[in-house]
Image (cartoon, rainbow, N blue to C red):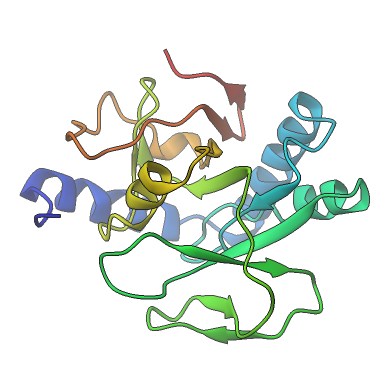
Amino acid sequence: MSSPPLHRDHLRKAMIAARKQLPASTVSAWSAAIVRHLLKVLSQPPGRCIAFCWPIHHEPDVRAALAAWQQQGSLAALPVVTAPAQPLAFRAWTPDTRLEPDRYGIPTPAEGPWVQPDVLLLPLNAFDAAGYRLGYGGGFFDRTLASLDPRPLAIGVGFELNRVDSIQPETHDQPLDWIATEAGCFRPC
């Protein structure tokens, strides 16, 4: 995958900076609203295995939704970077799972069974109404969505302040099936 165009790198940095300026109380309140919306729209677990991302840089914290779905029998999983420029692998997660920082400083399961998710909850640094997301620029989730068969249901999770007219998607960008923000859940146009 080639390096990201300058406009996307600038947009990514601006969107992360805007989110990092949010007070912790706002992040908590908006995260709780996202969890309520997810559980209303997806009152039954949306899959047997649901992968999510550990919240970093003031991303939404949706662990409460995972806990509710786990109580209904779903597995939760976290992504693991196994090699640069490769699809992600996933390990099962519970609140008791031992986590260690990965090469990017993100808490990751240090051990445990590998699983294949039916659903991916993906962080959104920026997103648009067409269902495209801007991540951190490594292309891990785009490669992962393109490689998994069957393709998991992809749900972007972010805050409305990161909504843009267009991320100017490139050919490798994988569209989302749903987007969840503090304003609600919607299917892309």
